[in-house]
Length: 106
Length: 106
DNA sequence: TAAACTTAGTTACATAAAGTAAGTTATTAA
DNA sequence: TTAATAACTTACTTTATGTAACTAAGTTTA
Image 1 (cartoon, helix red, strand yellow):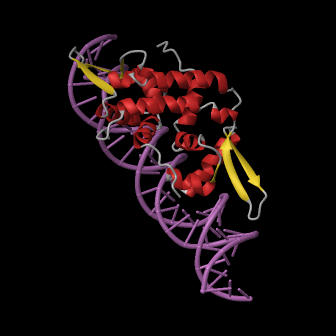
Image 2 (image 1 turned 120 degrees about the vertical axis):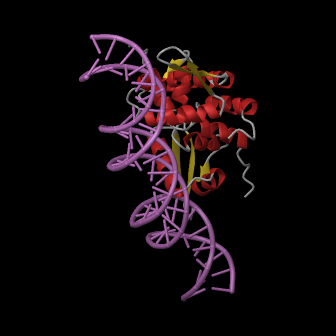
Image 3 (image 1 turned 135 degrees about the horizontal axis):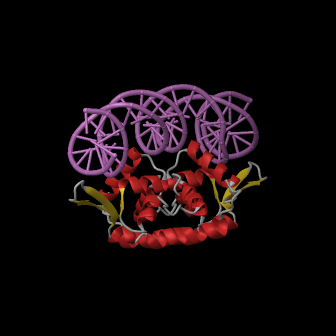
């Protein structure tokens, strides 16, 4: 009884970042704007789920979709300010992984 | 072509932390060792998935399970050193959530 | 000019993960 | 004796993800 309840903002952040592929996708976009196919082959996500995630993240103002009207049209995905603000989280995970993740650890 | 491949240690860390419930469960255990039912009611996870997660995290040396031979027997779950080392990641997420997560943002 | 290829997706179907609710075993309380 | 609690497990349903084929628009190749 009287468990201190988990902060709803924190829970939202966790539910965003712990959705499969989301963190890896944001990490991938840290290196600059990229096209659908490039993201797909870089992180090994299926087209279907990538399409879903990009829509969700666009909706949440983490990713922006830019249509470049060349012929043929090019679509570039990049991080918004909010998206870029996630970098420190991913760097902290990166550091942790170097210290604590071993090859054999499943 | 020639995409710099994502570091496998980082990918492992991400796949650990972005499994549903895992980050929240570790966060919950930051406040000290707790029993099955307490964790369950604190974070709202089903018994089935909590049971799975605890086993996985025990196997990965993130959580330890201690049987206290009182009558009735009490089982306490707590973080190992490796588990505790995840705290900075969760604090970074906590900070980020305070700055960037709004009520209306789905 | 037709056939094949590329990008940025979508659709239909299959499998895996998670949720729900009831059941289990052991113990203790009324 | 009946009921209750803790820590799970099992069976079943729903949701998420993966696979692979398909599409539309334009482009390169033969």
